[in-house]
Length: 295
Image: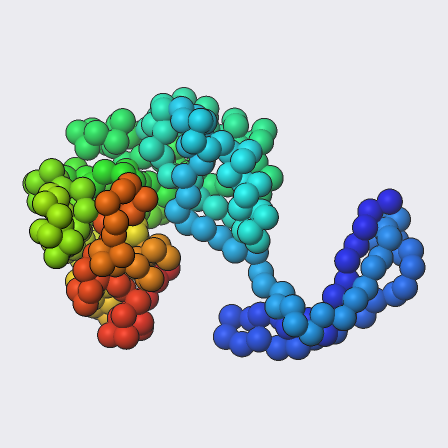
């Protein structure tokens, strides 16, 4: 016998509003699709019922780095948090840059995932930025193409990837970082870095590549998504591109919304890529940037 939980007077979240609703339930044992169920009902006016969440940027680290995470542990954690679908990044071993390599990942997904797990395939072979992956071969089994963790440095390579992605009806999902502007940095190039003698990463290293890529989007017309933006300039570039009618979206992370480099301490807990930026040039969540489009 299956247990079914029925909520009355719950708050139902819709796209633009939250409304109160009661379900019609029957006490006791009922039949559900031919299966006997034990039905429990209760009033919960303080509960909000939401559709399943989707996270378009997760790292389940399998195959290759299962000591960090696995499809099983990652998908179960996602389910516990209300997520019914996730998109997994391709910085794996092997990198999903061919049909054979992608199948190693999808086989694990089919066996171990408890929610919908949609893999990204890589843009380039080995995420090395030198040669396009087998985009056409992988297209039926991937959600989009990304070299997340590394920026595609060559305009010619990104142009070729966008042309192929558009032909396949797939999106390019970009980790935007100009390697020549990193200069060995590991935190933001702000007051904290200067005060503590650290090598900094400038904001331009992020938004310069977004600007370059958006020029290619204007030329080619492919769908384009920017990963984990961290600067106000990035927000403004995406906002303007959307206003032009380009098929462009972006995302950020909660740490970029609530922290900045003034919160740094002399340990590794705050090290991330892109780094926490300095106010007021940071924080896509600042009052001036709250209207920025996300996904």
